[in-house]
Length: 88
Image (cartoon, rainbow, N blue to C red; front, top):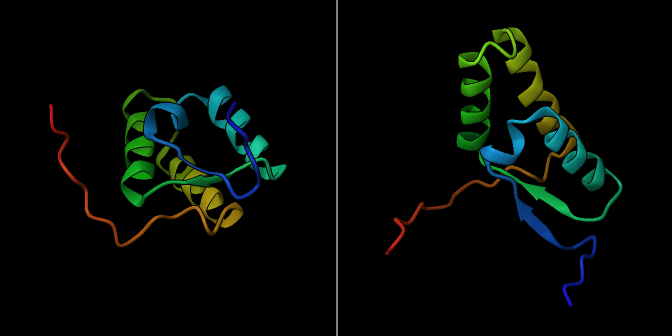
């Protein structure tokens, strides 16, 4: 059994932050304290870029989205990491 506690962290990749309904659900659950969301600037850039590309938002809306996410969850930003290539 997996136990989810307020100290549980989850890296939210662009594929779960792009769709509005899934993003909203995951952030609301995090807001209730069930887990700590994590993301990188690169992940948020990818979300914004794809929302713009698919004409889901304006540039100002994309900027506001990522700014508000970082304001709401200031501990979510992961910095100082080194991406490692996947080995297959």
